[in-house]
Image (cartoon, rainbow, N blue to C red; front, side, top):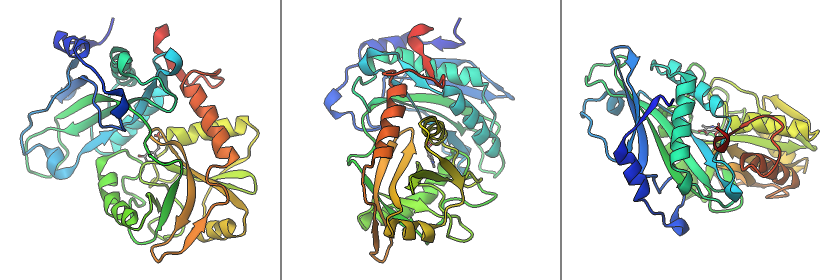
Length: 357
Ligand SMILES: Cc1ncc(COP(=O)(O)O)c(C=O)c1O
């Protein structure tokens, strides 16, 4: 028995939907249905699947003023007609509740969170792209709906799940990264480890300026010393130095990426040594220049593994990697994607196969 009500109009919207498969892009094309639930008087109301559409909200909803908002990003895969398959959905459920706790928002039962994602993926199965690297991007989120301009934690919220048939996140094969030495995304005691809109809002100006200089993304350094690597705005980072993988150790100003954690396990299973430690940007630059750092890549649900071709500074200095898509990035990308897409064994038990439920 599902805990999620299915509105008949949602089924009608699904039946009447057609997709322009050649123009899906990333996050642009929305599935015809969504899940909604309201939190009032200290408890969640029913979750319901309804047709996708606009919301009517009071302009005084606290989210518009004080940004009490959290979200998750995950994917359903259906390559070679497998699945639909979900990748480690309970990890997203856990992180959603970690974000909720930081933002003084109600948690959602993990099983219910996962069920809402399963219901969306199962009902949208015909809109899941079947080419490798493509998927149904699923966006659970929650925001404060209480109508009041006073600054205090809200006591009314809305939880929703959207889905978007999506292709590649980046249009190029590798990306270039500006080392961000001026702006700060997150700091100790702040909200960096929570997946909340304000972190992304704080990053937009830096990324805009970096793009104007010809870079794709910025690399955030720790806010205190502007010296230790943290992450990119929507991705974690790995570097291959002397044949071993290095990634910044988790701090409270870094988002604990599920792709990052999975790649650490995958790399170790291939016999690759992985270090999670403080990474000094000046040391990394020297390692790129002396040839000991041969590869770098960004990773995340949206970006999968995206190789980094080089880093640079605002004054025009450039540090190019020897290999823009090196063998280790390529092996890990193939290994991870083939598990996610159900094209190989899943020794880690990461996959939830919706066709088997
Ligand atoms: C700031 C940030 N860092 C890292 C990641 C990668 O996390 P995951 O691998 O769980 O998608 C994301 C994407 O969710 C992100 O937004």
